[in-house]
Amino acid sequence: MKQSCSILSTYTADVSGVCSALYEMGGMTVMHDASGCNSTYNTHDEPRWYDMPSMVFISALAEVDALMGDDEKAIDDISRAALELRPRFVAIAGTPIPMMMGTDFRAMARLVEERTGIPSFGFATNGMNSYDQGAGMALAAVAERFCPPELKAGKPAAGGRPAINLLGVTPLDFSIGGNAGALRKIFEEKGFRVVSCWAMGSPWEELMKAGEANVNLVVSSSGAPLAKALRKKYGVPFVTGLPVGRKASDDLFRLLEEAAADGENKMPEPPSSGEDGKLFVVGEPVQSAAIARALELDYAMEGVRLLSPQIFPDEEAVFAALSGARTVVADPLYRPALPRGCRFVPLPHEGYSGRIYRKDIPIFIGESFNDWIERELEL
Image 1 (tube, rainbow, N blue to C red):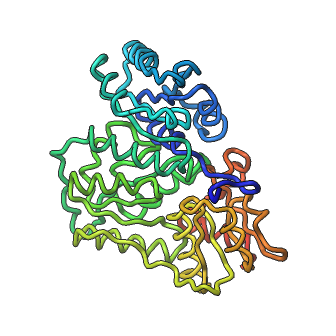
Image 2 (cartoon, helix red, strand yellow):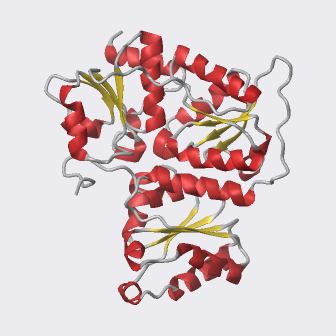
Image 3 (cartoon, rainbow, N blue to C red):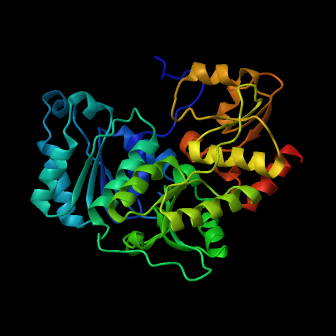
């Protein structure tokens, strides 16, 4: 019962992470479920649903098929739909009911591929893990299957900065209010060539050029498996971080150049937080670490502490950790966990509160973070 929540919310599930990661790639994604997971995804987890078409379907798993463990109907329906729609690939993702049935998703995908000739993936998601696990496995699978192995990065021009891929960019972490665009823009303005953005705003042709990058930047935990897959395929190093704040962004740019030069993976120094710190940043691990580092480097704030319930979904632990907090940066749905008198800085997160506070998500990339946090903290 440690992973149950009675007051706080939960993060978007892994099955929605698969759908979100693959949404713009021209594939067909099928949630193997009765009905509910699809409505949750398109209503709360997918802000592109009404403006950008994508082939995301539900298998309409029937009770009798679940009881009897009969996967043939789903395999036949998926195959017929794929032959009619001719997607670039087929992805089948699981939910709680197939988990209890012991469904073999790889076997289902293999049968669909044999019947249609269309590359197919099976992801054993179960709706019980957070979105980054589903998105991570989906992005890595696409790179492993489709990215041409013969590509090779060219050397940066003399005095120029390296070419990069942005890994782990989905609306669940960056929403659709401008942060994904700001992320790409800041690197282009600083002289980096952005080869591809996995997986928002880059057409398939750009994604398939990922091997031309000198270094990869993991901007969310969803991008970590993809970074490892590209490292294995192309030998390209990766840096984990996000350009947030003035000094912290410059530090990240330096790490990217160093990684491209020496071929070693890099990560910014973690914030020098102590157990007695009273300022907490709560949320997605990479984003929270970048914000904490910006507070430390740009504003000399000491003892900034990180809390990532996405990794440790224990409501009691969250309440206990925040019991002595004096300032908290977090999604508004964490407000009930704050002690009396605590100063709260709301930073909505699409993967936690969905569409509820979407219009309140600030641009937090680069110096825009400084403008926002200075207003919030009256610095």
